[in-house]
Length: 464
Image (cartoon, rainbow, N blue to C red; front, side):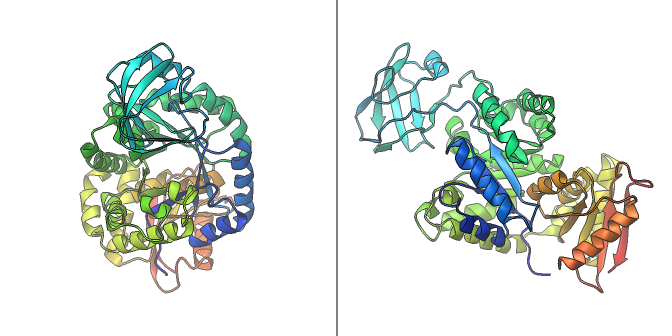
């Protein structure tokens, strides 16, 4: 079997990657998760691009569309770009230089507060604050453009994570065939439940990804990880609400806890930032990608690099090369041993751990998992086995959701009347796909499959 990528790559789609040719190239490169950020671009752009992506990926229906809601981020309005330099005084809101209409911002901003624009490239200090406008002094130099995010250091805007605008956008987007919904600025389990309730009322049972962008969310991290179907460590905004030196530590802590619970984690923001305008990354960025893999992240995300960058395909190829090499250096035996204590919580965990240990011990070529909901595959993945996890399911939504899971290669199979028939079909599909070869052993495991007679937790070894 040719080398496969265990850590998944999430590509943000924008003008740089929306053409049919670019989308087809990304699918051919192995990208299976495509993020559409509703904070940028028109609804028509996202709708039409998703339609094009589905057409280009017709032979690979396992493509996952991740829809990212804007959330309560305060952004500047529409205006002509303004160049500012150190010492300039600008006005925001009211009839000032830059439009800003968010009431929640003006309710909390005060004189001497510090403001950060974008990912913090420009710092402002408030010199005067009124009911609907502020004057602020510029520290630094740069160009201020429309729709930039604005953060108030040390303060939070009292806005719900799932906003009225999100609801309006989502009502439209639910007709596009999206697979996962990303909720921005999650603070607690309640935010996730609010979105899930909204989806359920509309007959949708879609996974919810919680974006961790506020330092306050760390107080509720355990309950968030329990309720969310996946989490994103969005280092850009997180680094605006936490001291910068804390972000790497927080990243490691969240990834470690997410793996323990079995919730897929995504590390995002500025992973290959220099590739916006360069065909090669910096050495520091290459190290950042590798270290995220050593931390144990399920996925790594490219944002501006693929949305608006000059070298989107090169960015994907570069991340893939770094990831493959880093994964070769992982001590899988130590990872397996470190998760041994997790196998004591319930029978499914014990089965999953045993499958991984068995695969390692007999040098199996793969672990074959039959799963209806994806839960069994996730439990296997958390132990980080050294071989591919071929996860087969008759449910397309499950297959697409498993694209976010470390080491999982999800395959769609036809519905079966028995577990044995599903597993036999899984072997056939895996052989046909070139994922396994004859003459070598595979470890087979399955959880209880609903509506299938004889379904039970099982584990066995089979010589292909």
